[in-house]
Length: 310
Image (cartoon, rainbow, N blue to C red; front, top):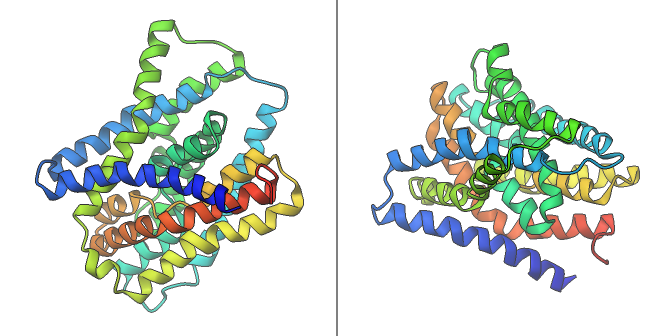
């Protein structure tokens, strides 16, 4: 068990070292906020669709469509559980703080951090589950998430997103067994490979702009962190165990439920005039604490599912 924990912890630390590069560059003034914003846009609008297309460019085996639909349902239910709990929290907070804090309880960083984690912990086969989670995440974010932040929900926002673009291209290829032209496929693959380093550098640079002292001295933020990093993965871990799901599917869902607060928290807080400072502090606190909690959750899920021996 300890060796498994050390292995997963090493993979998580590798990602944190990439974050450290972004943090140091931002602290030294070599990476400016405008540059971080542009890199974030590159990851969101170019790299993420390519990751989705590349993940779907695999040979479809018997039962795979059923597994993907099963995963979508499991991940959506896990997220909706968090949303239901969040409804009863922070009623005494001001509206501009309540929205981001509830949002942070529900939405994890499964695009920027979840996909690299699945790749490093479970391997390339698991990435397609991460891709499905990104699609479900976007549908929920632009409906429930926007409403939580005090914004108006529109059908266009829910259906038109970078993840949807990747899905529109990738899903038909997956269902029909078609392939992109070799040169296009190579270009898409190269861009998809940028996801891990670029996303980690962006997160690190964003953390450099947060108030670290306030992040670690607010009891309310520790409550959000405890729910996001511990309760959010533990409840599905225990509730789904009797269902005897596919081990890879089960582990992918738990890892994605265990990731820190989504970077989109700050983006939507700014867009809908909520408290951006508390949003940044929650992202920073949970990201730093996840170096301890993520290996625990990942090893527990792998052990319970039978991927790793108990």
